Image 1: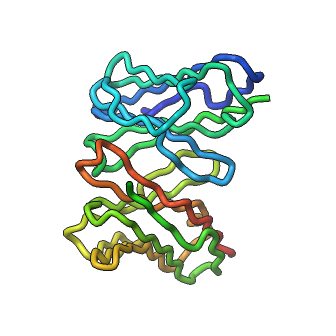
Image 2: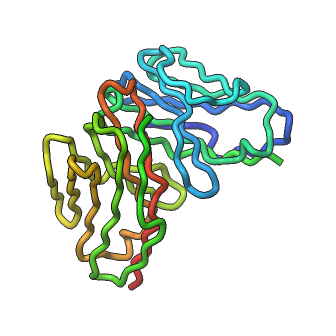
Amino acid sequence: DTAVSQTPKYLVTQMGNDKSIKCEQNLGHDTMYWYKQDSKKFLKIMFSYNNKELIINETVPNRFSPKSPDKAHLNLHINSLELGDSAVYFCASSLGQGNTEAFFGQGTRLTVV
Amino acid sequence: GENVEQHPSTLSVQEGDSAVIKCTYSDSASNYFPWYKQELGKGPQLIIDIRSNVGEKKDQRIAVTLNKTAKHFSLHITETQPEDSAVYFCAASKVTNAGKSTFGDGTTLTVKP
């Protein structure tokens, strides 16, 4: 059983399109995250949700809109995609807030052409 | 906010040698310090963590040390094996930080057979 699963694994799309990445965790965790990993492997937090409520938004452009329909799901919708959005996006979850292990999904490699 | 610096950015060792990766953090209130290993094409995975009430923790070939006064912590891998080759990330967080972990920039470890 996959603990944190995100789909799709690969996403190639043209500039200006709108796309979504889905994430689900079956660990019963209360907190979920979206991270962005750029070409240099730097890992930066984008959003954090706790029990469906947004608790962290790290100065991400408002073209990125996370949505959490329930605490097991955190989806990421991106409008008007730009070349600079190309990266690997990781979903993660943790039991607590900030001081417990984070479990990461396998990542979604987004390529904007 | 928290700032985590990680060194070196790349590290190459011979199989059987030891590897040491160091991180410093800026927020003295941080109290949780995990280390993640990221293999190619996968999400980061926790390999060891330490909390601020402990100075050292060991798990087989992996150990982590924490110096709260100096605000630095280190990962030690002994008897390295080719399968240890990966990108390693340190992170720092605190329970009051609403779920945010600040990651170091990563160390690419290569173990030569």
